[in-house]
Length: 248
Image (tube, rainbow, N blue to C red; front, side, top):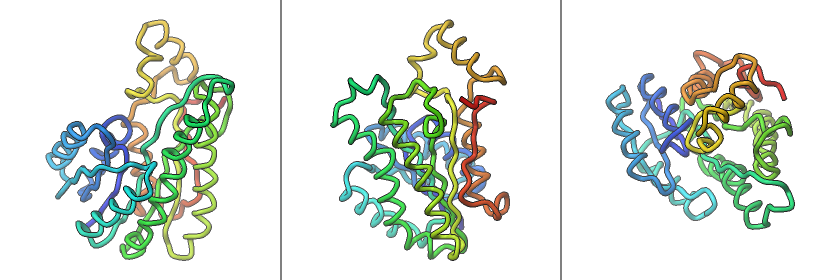
């Protein structure tokens, strides 16, 4: 039995990742925050595509108690976790002078503190597995400042990259691998306002030398590659860029 926990699985990258892992026969623990019906749809579709069982569980990454309760539920459902995909996140845009302290703290809680706490509390289940790996969904914004996203988002994703690299070193002696993906612009609901017009779509396409807009399935394939030891057993502490050639 292979088990994967995927946060933010109601849509976009999370949903695509759930469906890709389903094809590999993973039992899935999928999380949502405010989009229960959509996550249940993803779970049902995952089971149709090969998952032995897919669960949809509410999780608030800004609430330490919610994270603790979630881990208890996971412990009741499965004996161990092979793959943890820290995907859930929020986008922040706008210049620094307009960023409120509340917005700054919320962005970091969801995008950085939440993955830290969830990883920490799931480690016992990861250690029980025959093999285990963690994949964090970072962003090109964590590596370059030439992005639409604002400072809180960029800081949170840069922090997630640092978290990935250090955690990889800490957990390597136990055989637990830790990697990250750093996508450029991905066509999801989070960014639909930027490509809602032909002109907006053209601008985004022209940012990328391959002249494409990255799809959630592109990122999902990379996440599976990094998670699966049969594909990447010698890779840890790596940040895989999925940027269609965009470097800045």
